[in-house]
Amino acid sequence: MNLPLPERLPDTDAGHAKAAEVLRSGGLVAFPTETVYGLGGDAGNDRAVAGIYAAKGRPDFNPLIVHFADLEQVKQHVFWTPEAELLAQAYWPGPLTLVLKKHPDSPISPLVSAGLETLAVRVPAHPSARAILRALGRGVAAPSANRSGQISPTLADHVIASLGGRVEAVLDGGPCAVGVESTIVGLVDKPVLLRPGGITEDALAATLGRHLTVRHKAEAISAPGQLMSHYAPNALVRLNATEWEPGELRLGFGDMACDLNLSPSEDLIEAAANLFDFLHKLDARGGRVIAVSPIPHEGLGIAINDRLSRAAAPREG
Ligand code: AMP
Ligand code: MG
Image (cartoon, rainbow, N blue to C red):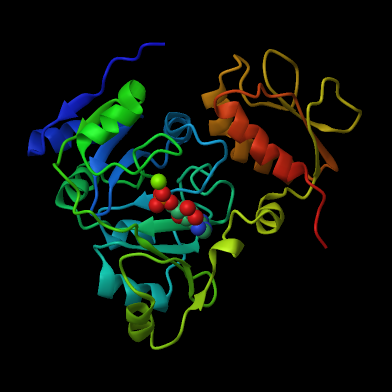
């Protein structure tokens, strides 16, 4: 498939407005942040978020950071805490990401946090990123704008070389100040340093007046044990179901009769967009088993199958 190259947008009011318009209509736009170029999509649009994973070509769903224009918008989506307030006052806008409990009414797509009940939020400092976020007026999910496994882009040309037509537009804001990634702090209960970055642990501890627990890479959220207990529905999950047993909740794929259908037309982006929402909806019906149709193991199907196999894994404790 030969996709057309992305439109290169100028770093002007008109360019920012166009970027916001593409995002508003569900398209993907790469834009500079103070760290690297981000691959942005409307965080409230399931299909746009699924499109981010598809464009990156990751084999799993790594939760994404949602970028906002200001603190007021952030507070509409998460349970804000006094410690979040201290850190936000000290370091926002800037390269600090906070992980907080997500508000149940937040319209952010569940695919953004890969099914977790938390949300990673940040107010970036880069003027072009801020201008786009202000023009859009809502949250933008944005991992680095490169194909999975390639190096992070610090120039619009890097984005175009890596993603090509998988992104609709690239806002060319020149080189990013070669930065480290944002520091990530979890504030769901006691403060935890989830990823070191530009803002140091000592600085954070001084601001908070207490030490942070440091989570080492080996125990990162990709550690299977943690993921499984976080992501598993209450019901048991039976994979690759080609027929349904009596009493099962049926999560289908393709043209078939079932309780909920990830994609009647076998569109993997649509299936990814529906995945977490539908698992939650079926689980809420309180059945014993959710049976899932086979999902093709290609493109986004690889990430969908990764997530489903975690949901189906034997339970801890
Ligand atoms: P990147 O977008 O490449 O800077 O990576 C985002 C990182 O944020 C991921 O590697 C996750 O580990 C982390 N992250 C995002 N959301 C959450 C969350 N809800 N809980 C914990 N970590 C998160
Ligand atoms: Mg990256």
